[in-house]
Length: 136
Image 1 (cartoon, rainbow, N blue to C red):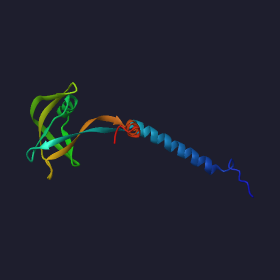
Image 2: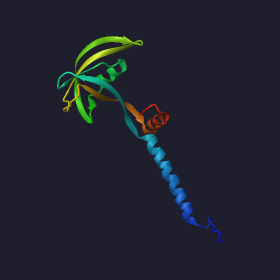
Image 3: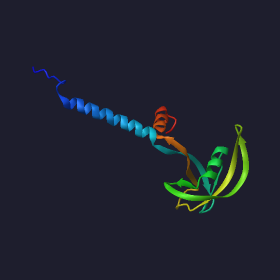
């Protein structure tokens, strides 16, 4: 049986160093890049262009700051037509009623799921929260 001496083989050392550098570059990239985190809320389709939603105080503030929402994979510009104020309270949290106006693609359902950009997070933090099971 032949015994191989890997200390003399430079290819193994070179491949190990390259893989280590690749892993280091990937970790730096994941730590530096940021992606948006989305909040989902359901809304009731009143008209072809109007949606009624009941967000809490934090989500209402985000809706006033943003200009786009995502419905069925389409980025849509919207405007807030009417803000009726506090509609009800649950668990010491205020819920507001807002009417949004947007060009909604043809949908068969009356209930629409809306995604709203919340804030930017590092990709590494998003992967950690997925690993813990906080985001599905």
